[in-house]
Length: 405
Image 1: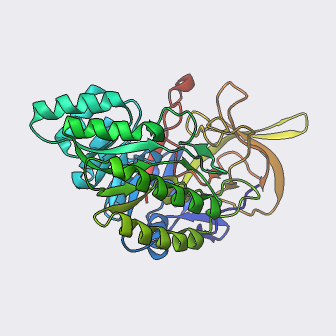
Image 2: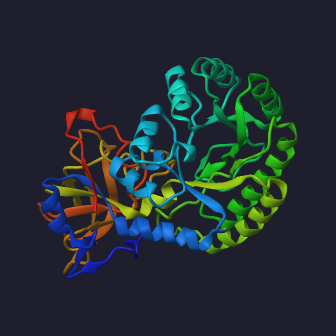
Image 3: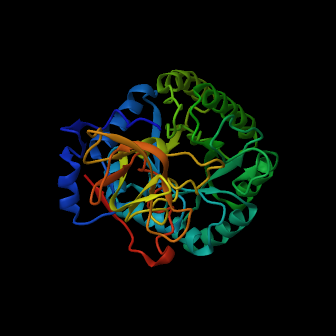
């Protein structure tokens, strides 16, 4: 089992979150299950990135990782921009007070209404098809204002060891690098306000050398494509890819190595694109380790020698922790009994939810403090792709609460 992240304090054998004991937070929330996101940990991660990255590299929050409005508002005051992936997310980003000039909109299936919404708001659209280019020409003409665009390029390389490959090969995302010159020409003919490139190659990578190689290749790709651009490159979004450790044996990313290499990338980018803002877009890396999911033990059952802790939470709230959100071979997220982390005795148990399916498994044969009814189970690394990536309506159980503490 992955150990409890060091960023969380334990006082008198009880987990602390947001500077308070877990049981006090449970009383304040009023019920379980819930997600809690710690402001102090969010701040610390932003500060660590600021220290490692070149000063002239902009830090954007990819809010698909966690679009909770209060959290987005908190992050909007700390990052340089927000990247959204739907009209709904765009509304949240605007409500959070982020300047539309620093909002970008990506996604392979933007609707006509979303394109019109984005043009009206004045945000940067990362175009991902020729259909979008043609639609934006008509929208901009009707609106009487330019449509700000960047080309999202599906690169001709993949991010090695990426947990989720978003670029390279045949992908629904972006415009293939081989077709990008044609797209740039059509943007010029359409009279759209070209601003730059968005090159996203993958996510959840813990190998600094793979990320550095992908950044080098991204810059080289942008340099090749710039000759066909209808205007100067003003924005170069190199994506993110920075991962967090979830499972036993995984080592945290060497941020210093990534940041050190990025200084060289930024220097070369400045030479090629003196007017360009260089952007790093991060979601999971910013918020993933700052969140926990908390549920309560309803029952302690023993079946043929195996102990099951049945909780009021499960895959309908936290699909990723159940292993049903991208895992090929199921692995356990780090878990603990939050109100008795070490405990006076320990045992191997399986933590399951209340749903009538064997897929409802939060922890498979994990060693925890001996737990009883009303004890609190905590799932760590839950700040990203937890609440919104889960099927809340499955089997009709109540949805969880979210709090920012």
